[in-house]
Every structure is written in structure tokens, then in C-alpha cells.
Length: 288
Image 1 (cartoon, rainbow, N blue to C red):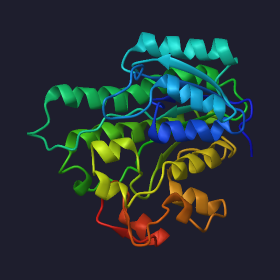
Image 2 (spheres, helix red, strand yellow; image 1 turned 30 degrees about the horizontal axis):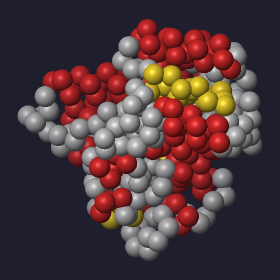
Image 3 (cartoon, rainbow, N blue to C red; image 1 turned 180 degrees about the vertical axis):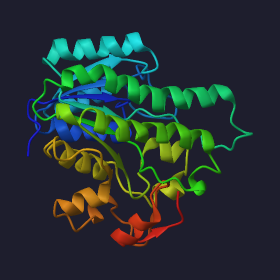
């Protein structure tokens, strides 16, 4: 298993899960394009595309930071072109960029509704669409969407309908594109965490320190993504993977390193179907 010499195009990879995936690939000597908007430091969230590039190169990879708003077709096209010019192609597309607001219908203004749908559903479609011509020429091409299983229970919609619609739009890209491009040997999968993940977004915007203290590190998602990328693309496609289940299939049984110091139940992530929690038997507390 190695991603040496492979080229990854990652949207929104300046921090958190996207950066963790980039760093895991970089340890093999992969090439990574970080296509994100964060060129200047955010007051609440650490990391820019340039600090991410530095970390990638320190880890052993080659990095290309590109300022890119994935809502803008011309900017995405330019980022893809720069990637191909710099590294000679694209092997893996990671749709990580996402916008979130957990509000009900009456509390969601249409500007925020549009933002979530433009970044999550439309952005995933657009980035994939422009990477696919290059993925068709790769030896083991993968598209990975950081998106949940399509569990159509009302409980996932009733409290944050707009966000769920936008996030499930990413999942529908997995469902449709995996079938559409199966003949081309392009794997299209989703990956979602079983538990909450300790990122700056969780600490500052979502659950706060109390949820972060019951979360796993982004490295569990990165290790699961790494395992997926090394699977044969013609055999492993159209799946809605859960991080822990991916790693268990790889022989991992001890997950304590991803949540050091946590002895009790972890915070379960939302969008995870009940049967998945039952299957894994991982102890979780109230759904995040």
C-alpha cells in the first residue's frame, strides 16, 4: 500500500479532516493540491492553504496551494489545470469542502441555504466533473466524498433540513457517479465518521469543548481514506463507508490512539444509521 507519486486534489483541505488526509498521503510521497479559500488566517479557525502546504512538504509530499472558491467554475477549472501542469495528472479527488448551519426551516435565511447547497452539493458535483477527464487516465482513480450514508429517516431532516439536503446532495453524487463511471474504472465512494471528530470547527462552531473532549482525532478518517485509496478502483466503488468499519476490515482492533484519554462513551456523529452503531458495538453517547 502506497500513494507515492500519486496526485490528490483536495477541496477545503487547509485544516481538519482534509488536511489530515493530505498529510497521510504526503507521508508516502504523494503530490497534493490544496484548493480552498483560506489564504488569510481565520480569526477562529487555524490554518491557511499555505500553512497546509508547508506541513505537507514537511511530511514528505509535494504541495500546490491554490486559492479556489469551489462555487466558481472558472476557479475550479484553473485549479485543476494548475494541478495537471504541475504534477502531470490527477489520481484522487477528495471532496472535503463543506458549509454547515444546523438551523430549522424558519431560522435558515436563504443566503445561508444557497451557500450550503452551492458548496456541498454543487461544489462536489463541479469538482468531480472537472477532475473526471483526468481521473479516466489514472491507473487506480478514486473520488472520495466526505458525505454521509443516505439514511432517509425524518430525524436527520427535521432539525436542520437545509443542511441535510445539501449534505445528502454530496451523497447522491456518490450514488450516481459510481454507477455512471463504473465502466471507466473510477471508484466513487463516500466516507463518514462513526463518532464526532475533534476539529477546530467542532470546538469553535458546533459542539464546543465538551463535544471535542468526547471526539476522535481527524487521523482516523485520514487512515480510513488512505485504505480506500489503496483498494482497486474497479472493485471498491459505490460504497458509503464508515471510518471505523473501514479500518476494522484492514485488521485494526484498537482505536484508543484516536481518542487518547477518553475512557467512556464517545460522541456519536449524526447521519450514522442506527444499525451501524449496533454493528460496530462502539459505545457512544447522545448523537452530536
